Length: 337
Image (cartoon, rainbow, N blue to C red; front, side):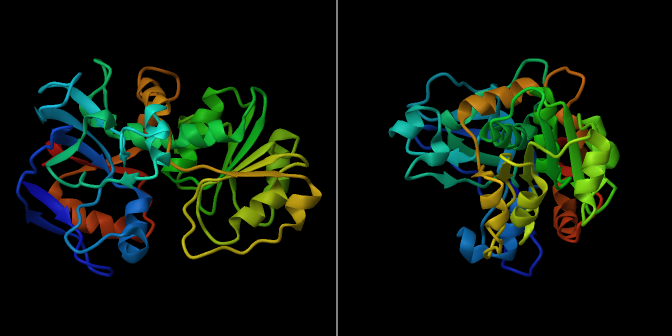
């Protein structure tokens, strides 16, 4: 099978031929229809030691496909089933796993393997796609679930005002869910305007340039300070920035992946009695809700898709995304060549 293989920090991915893996007793073999390129994948290749990524690793954790073969212990799935895959693999036996929360299993590992034509996963990681959802679009279920989990962690109530820092895929999906779950105002802020149209298409009520004047711009658009600020960039100093933006007794949610430490002055959070929470991963019930949200509706996560590429384009596209292009969500798709 073809796969995009990691060869080391500072080196582009290599397209190579690998053997098709065999499913274990509790696993299924998936023929991958599409896999999204995630910002976390970029982080992994820049700091492979932190993430436990070595030479020869196949990235990719946002994927969907068709079941080809099942292990002997698999029940409830059969060849031909169309599934999306949740990338958190737990033991399947502990309390967290039994609650449908493998992300918090003591033995959890985040799988890769999506940048290939086939992958093996535990059957419990799979959920069937709705009949009317194109198989390729099932690859969006993972990031959509991440956005949902962040909003659920925030405690958002209908009528709240929301500011989202960062107009990348996760920031836009947080905006999507905030609006879907009843927020009155949802403003997305970024240092560039190239995602403004996409933010409005996915449900945001406004867009602003991030910087010293952001608080005033938010008030101009909404008449109030934000009840909740989501930090969806993962850059040093932005949690502190969010604490200064949110209203008294408001909530700040850290969603962005900030690697290498951060700096912040807790006085603003303390003096305003801010609630600061963090969000990572999701539960399987949220994954199922994400699949439902990919169906018909006024605002659709599919608006994030800006490109579909074949394996031959993966190394060049991956490096371009590292340089912060105007792309949003690029899918490696089997039918793209």
